[in-house]
Length: 222
Length: 278
Image 1: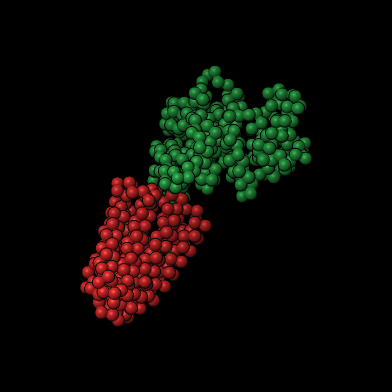
Image 2: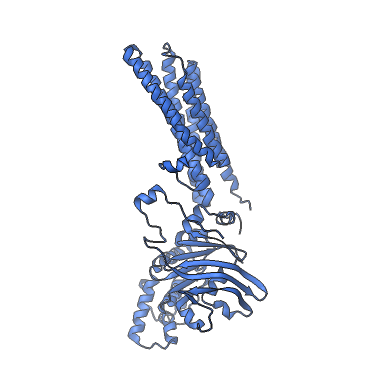
C-alpha cells in the first residue's frame, strides 16, 4: 500500500545520493587541483563546500520532520537514522576536501617536492570506497559494505608510508619542511576521507541488517 | 511463524542494560498455546497458533482488524464460550500447565484468575466503592475492613486512589472516560487475578488518559501478566516487552518488541508496523 508521505522518503534518499555524488566530486576535484596545481579549481572546491553543508542541514531537517510526524519504525527508522549519520560523514568529507584544496593553493606556488604518485593512488582508493559505500545504500549489499571497511587498511598503509617518506625529506633537507608538512596533512585528510567511507559502509550494514558492526572486528571480518 | 531476537551490541553488553522485558531476570513461561485452531461455526478464525507467553511481562497482540488477535485473547479466559457455535478443533491453551478448556476447569474460576479490561469502559451503575468490590461481593465477602482495604489497594494499583478517595460512594458513571477505564482496571485487580487481558483498553481515551493507562500497565506488570490487544503501533512499542503479529488468523511473527519494531524478520510484519497495510 502506497502512503501519501512515501515521496518524502524518496526525496530523502535522493538528497543523500546527491550528497554522496557531490562529496565524491569534491574529492576528485581537490585531488586534481593538487596534482595540476590548478588554483582556480581549488577555489571552486572551497566554494562548493557550501553545497555539502546545505545538503547536510536539509537532510537533518527532513529526517527530524519525518521522525516527528511519520513515526517511522523498522527499515524506515533505520534509514532515517543512517541517513543523518551518513550525511554528517559526507559533510566531513567535504571539510577534508576544503583542507586539501587550501593546501593545494599553497603548494601551487612551490616547486613539486616529488611526483604525485601515492597521494593520487590513495585518493582514488578513498573515492572508490566512498562510491562503493554509497552503492550499498542503493542496493543494500552488505558484502560490498564489509569489503569497503576492509579496504581501509590499504589507505592507512599508504598514509604511513608517505609519512615515513616525507619525514626523511625533511631530515635530509629542512627547506622541504613546509611542503612536506602540507603533503602530510593532505595525506592525513585522504586517510580521514577513507575513514568516513568506512563509517558510511558500517552504517549501511546497520541499515540492511540492523546489526551494529562498529568497533567489532570479528564481525567486519565475517 | 518467525521468531527472532535483537542482536547484542557492544553498548548493550558494556552497560548491561536490561531490556524492559527482563529487568535483568529471565522470564518464565506462564501461558502455552499449542497447535490451536479455533472456529466460529464453520469459519476458522485461528490457524495452528503456537505461542508461549511470559509471566509478569506485557505481551502485545497486533494485526489488522479480523486477524484473530481479540479472538485469541478471549480464548485465554474462555470468553468465547459465551458465543454460540464456537469450537476448538485442535490444540489447546495451558496456564501454568493446566488446560483451560479441560472439563474440570470452571470458567468462572478461570476468569477470576484471568481478568479482562475491555475497549469501552463498563463501570456498573453503582458507586466507585461498589464497582471495585463487585467481584468480592459476589464471592460472598462481607468483612468491611477487608473490603475497605481491597478498595484502597486496588484503586492505588490502578492509579486512581488520589483522584477518587474523597468520593468513593459517588457513582462510577460520574468519572471521566479515562478514570472509568482505570476504575475497571481496579475492579479487575481487586479479585487478585494472575493475568490481565486488555482488549484495546485505550482506544476510547484521550492522550492524557491513554498515557495514564500505559503508565499503569508498566506498574501492573510487576504483579500481573498482561496481554494487550492494540491497534496503536506506538502503544505496543511503548508498553510491551514482546509483540505477536497476527494476519488472517495466523501468527506471523512473535519476538521482543524491540525486534518487531526495529528489525522484524517477516516482510508482512514490516509492512504492517510501517503502516503499509492493514
